[in-house]
Length: 175
Image (cartoon, rainbow, N blue to C red; front, side, top):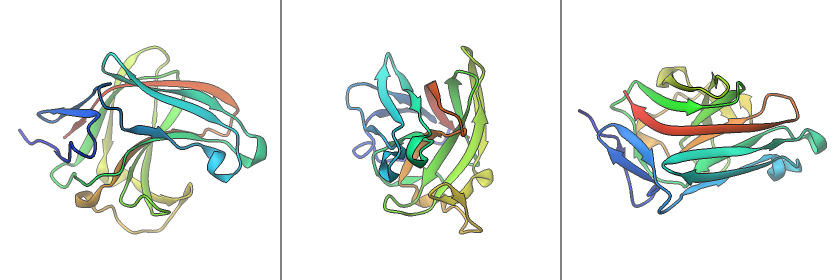
């Protein structure tokens, strides 16, 4: 079985067990990134409880806001041996976006949306070739994702509605 080539020193909140990434509260390395970076007032929280990553908060539309997100701390991750990532999630029936980034400073993010079922654990498969390049939420024509140079993982919500949200992630598996 392939193992994800992750630098655990840089992303130490994830413990690798074969191809599965499980979350550990012993050294959290996830942080929030909300619309406050551009004047909005949405809020979110990320924590790890009982091995579950919990992303909760409130999206607000005032001041041209409208999104909340979380990211892993920057690192160097090689996903070139994988064609997809699978997430086990429990949501609130809302749509979320999964993101990978190859730069942490104003760079291009690659994202794909997925739906959740309120109150139910489901598995979501995200083929890496379906991730679309974006910058500041706007889709770009390119460049293609270089799977060998991933610098962060992220999740976000921004459905154009003012609303509370809650997403739990049990694990992320490379396929």
